[in-house]
Image 1 (cartoon, one colour):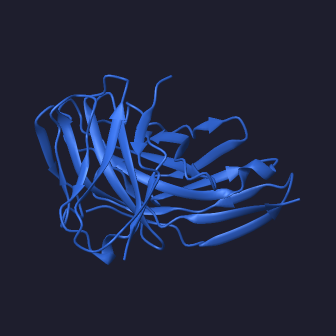
Image 2 (cartoon, helix red, strand yellow; image 1 turned 90 degrees about the horizontal axis):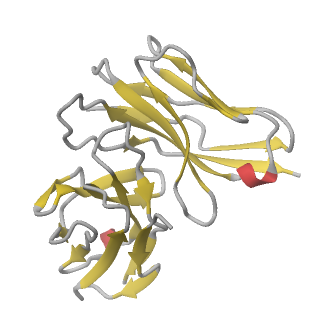
Length: 114
Length: 119
């Protein structure tokens, strides 16, 4: 089954403790992206990747890192999480980065930083 | 920069009725895509419908249709014969057309409309 898999689904952590949210897709997609969803703000892009070893900032990249060493994986790294990073996170992928190629979303990761 | 505005934070409607969710956007682009996404309580983001700006014909998908008014920069979603399973948060989103050079064609989302279908 074609899908984008995020783990974990829920995560509670403390300020400053490094964490990684994993994202994997099995559709051989070139384009991958991370969004965060906050009430009253909709979804905002954090980082994106056009292909292996090609990543760039989105609208809200501060406090986050990403890597794209393999085509299928695009982990989101929070080196020193803070409470303002409490949010719902989505990974998404598409064949290429345009609107003709549907964006497939993972099921989300609910992160709470205390 | 593009902005997407959904002015109805919450709506409710009786089952089997028709409901229209509004969306306006602001852009200087001439070629772009517009989307409606549904987010049920399961948190999944599900694509409901897509419209290409250069197409004048309004997109339809079964009970879902849009009213795309390019000059007015308006993109409303109509749900006909609403069902309990339509209860969800609905997001309007914009993506500029990258042409043949794909860059970061990111989605710019509105703030969402929470729709409740009442039995």
